Length: 285
Ligand code: SF4
Image (cartoon, rainbow, N blue to C red):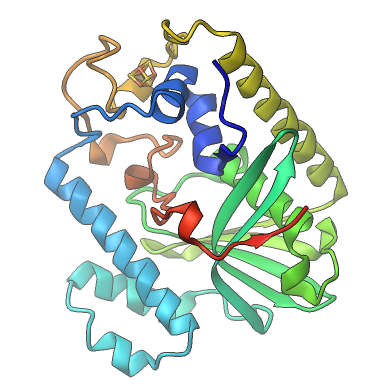
């Protein structure tokens, strides 16, 4: 069995593979939908996801130029109102002037494409670019955890590879890029990363080898058997496949979920669900 050549890797699918190869296989190769909740209580988890989506929509509209007063009229949920106020008061203010909210970039890596949808890319043409990612998690991951996340590796790497259209046709150099995570529940504690040649080279090696490894493993593996399960059983508590893998029935608690977890509900690594086929993508290479 092999991955379809049109398969597109993202930070989410790569993170799934790193967390558990079997989960990648079940979710992206077998495309198995399993009727289990990921996080408990389910209602609170769903509300958090919906609130996170609403927050992203709100900021998107603000960045498109809709007046604050007009947007504020629609913010009735108390926690969403608190996040919105925090955003208005403390979101990074010294960003470059050309703003690209919800922009999608992609580039080839090996035999596949790597794709990312950014919350915001702000560019000062020819000088610098800042990637901004809004997080709505209960808990704030520490710097080391965030640094290890595939998102922190994929987003700046892909902006170097595919950011020309946002920069008047010129490639962006690694040292021109920064990335900031801004936390709605911790608005005074953003986390900044500055990119450079060394990190770019390291990310290139990591992402190329990871994608080649996944493709090779899927190709060599007997399609009727499952890839090995993760040794980190705590990961299974927040995975919908846990009953299939005989790793328990009850979902882990939302508020106990480790910030390193891959699921967007708990750690706020929220990506809009979107159909790549229906998006006018900025595509290179
Ligand atoms: S339940 Fe555990 S072993 Fe099974 S796919 Fe999920 S993370 Fe992997």
